[in-house]
Image: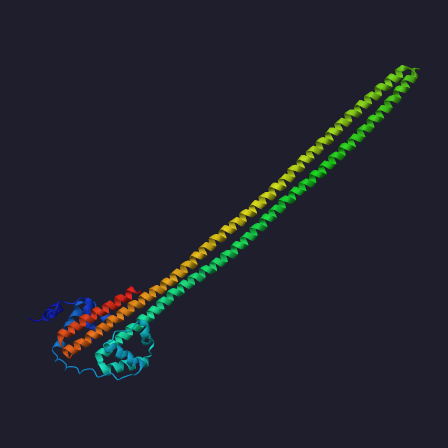
Length: 397
């Protein structure tokens, strides 16, 4: 029966149809395009089937020669290749970090050496190993540095804003204190002006009372003398100059004048005392207003100081939290990077296991062209590669 699709093709080999991700490396190995471009479309599957059938129609290659013995010593690149391909496990990430700093010439020399000693297939696997390790290390360092730079920039931005806020707080506090002092000065000045006016008004009123008292008292005295003189003249005209009538009437005039002067003095005293009492009360009220206003200003200043202190404490607390979070996040980035390094190590070890398996296959079969062994190689290599990319995603690379 003619084979018309991939499912029938792999069934004829005693295998189930591989998944799309498993067929992608085969698609690339057949020279049909990159593994990343393979989506399992009908057109891609037809091309892949044709390539596999074309390969099957070709004669199997001659058995590969046993790998030549690796020369003793050699460059660092050669030693690394020997360590990688001679059956040794991959060393810890830090110990082989030199591979990630190879230049183009060093890398080419290492790959040429691997091909000449171990064969092209292993050289290709080694190149893939080095390329992935370089990309992983570069991305790891770039991502970690990017995150740390972002954290530092965010911290710097916050500290700059915090400093600006503190300066603005100090300026606002100083302005508010100056405004409070200015308002207090204006109010106290107004109270002093009112006290001066009250004193002036009181002094003027007392002076008017004194003047009115003296003027009225003088008029009463003058009227008394005038009334006595008029009474004397009347008595004399009546021929009673030395009579008791004259004495009696003169006494009456003097008594009346005395009562008027007493009433005048009493009224003057009362008016003066009332004015002085009113002045004292008004002055006490003004002094009390000045005291109350001063106390209010002090309370306002205390409130401003307390508000500034609380705001400063809140800013200090927030600053401490931000700096603490910066430290935590910085340490977390270090932990994430360490975990990513560990994942890379594990992926590289998976790659080494794949190399070991290929070498074992070589020993068992003597060549790579046997279809069953090749299918096993492709399937296992695909699984190892998938594990590697999974480790990359888990590591955040």
